[in-house]
Image 1 (cartoon, one colour):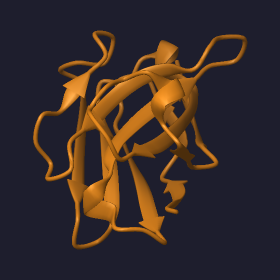
Image 2 (cartoon, one colour):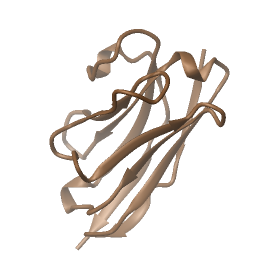
Image 3 (cartoon, helix red, strand yellow):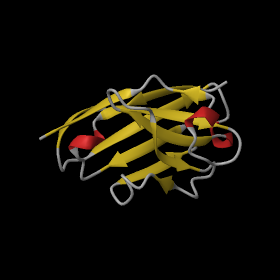
Image 4 (cartoon, helix red, strand yellow):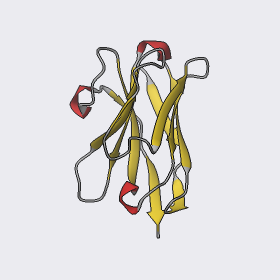
Length: 123
């Protein structure tokens, strides 16, 4: 089984940028579809971005498209989420997740999760 550890969260002003990292261990990283989800206080967990096994086919939620970029480095067993033009509504706990089968953005299909990293966007 793969273990996931997120890092890079913090406090940033609106309009700023932040890069999240998710380091994987205990599995064959290149065999996993990797995704980012987020959960704001009082809201359900929502899909943010997903990337295929070899780094292709990135897909994004409409709310973050053109502002966020997901990437992965299979040699480093790490997936990244670069966030730019951050908005107040991007404030949430961000989770990375992994699955071994087809690409999708249903959180229920992801078997492996990190503990989350807090991103707070201030005005």
